Image (cartoon, rainbow, N blue to C red):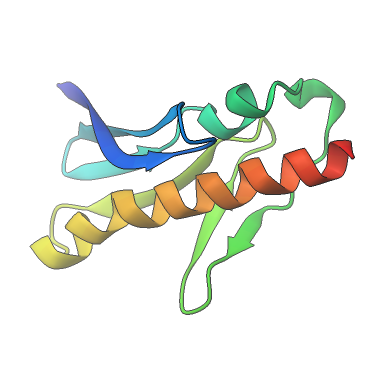
Length: 106
């Protein structure tokens, strides 16, 4: 059975639009993603862009799909602390992508 939850991270893209992370759990596996939130908030068409596969966040990095969805996988056997950290990393990566998309438009 697949369970999905949307987490409000307390961050925003522009001071207004909230950064939300979709957490999907299925058979002991997790996927944490921004659901394309950075792309939507920036108002760009993902079909017209090419995205890097990863965004470097210093000690960590996050994945980016071809459609501009920021995501990280997780597994139930990971520590609770690590699983709790993943939504924050996705949110941080989503904001970084959003800002890069705005800069690219200039």
